[in-house]
Amino acid sequence: MCGIVGLFAKDAALEAELGAHLARMLTSLSDRGPDSAGFAIYAPPVADCVKLTLRGPAGYDFAALADALRKRLPGTIAIQPRGTHAVLVVPDADAAATRDALAALAPELVVVGVGHRMELYKEVGLPADVARQFHLADMQGSHGIGHTRMATESAVTTDGAHPYSTGPDQCLVHNGSLSNHNAVRRDLRRLGYRFATENDTEVAAAYLTAKLHEGLSLPAALQGSLNDLDGFYTFVVGTETGFAVLRDPIACKPAVMAETDRFVAFGTEYRALADLPGIEQARVWEPEPATVYQWDRQQDRQ
Image (spheres, helix red, strand yellow):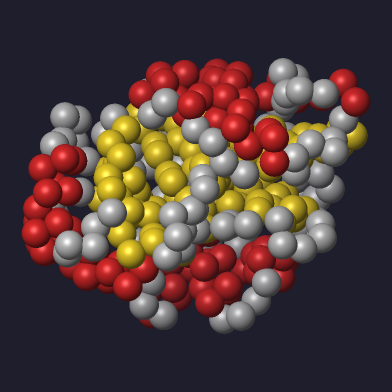
């Protein structure tokens, strides 16, 4: 089952409403994924700084963590707690030292995402509750993706929730199942990639990170996955400047897209798009199998 949503604002005026729209889209697919939910928002950057999204136990004292970090790294800019997560903002030059300090000061925390713009949140629970816990409706950004999970092959845990991020400002949500993820994981481990879970989606995310690191464009990396990843899947990928969609060659998982002069939107079902502004005038279509669709703020649509 599972549900996927994505929204890309072509009109800058829509960016202030992006979180509110994404929250409604995510909630609309609750029956496809009542076990857990998550999302990534590409929010405005902080000049010369990187954002680290941290996840901790309920009630974690992130303010005390920030004070401890400032004693070690005076350049720490800010920390914004949201439920069990917090976004830590530090200068680019301090990113590696901050990761080392976090490992020493707070080994119980998990860094779920790193990037100049990406903020990533996920938790167990109904999509509406997860969206409310992290105040998704109040968030602003140029684009975002989200996922509602129905656990079919593993336990209901926060680690099993999507999105998965394995590279800076890059994340992936996935509906489907990969049959060769263990073999691909072994190959990626030989290249130095580490995995926090046994989830097949984390493997797909790391596969794309590896291909991007080799110098491939995102469309080329996704095209490569058609040969290297076995199974059935719909991928929605977020990057710093845009998002992309790919369905496997059989395309057995449902998907629908819509585009106007203000936005591009993706949903597992049309109901996820039904409340978007101007949807009545949108071009609506079903993505073709084995075809990469990409929208990027820095280049024409591919």
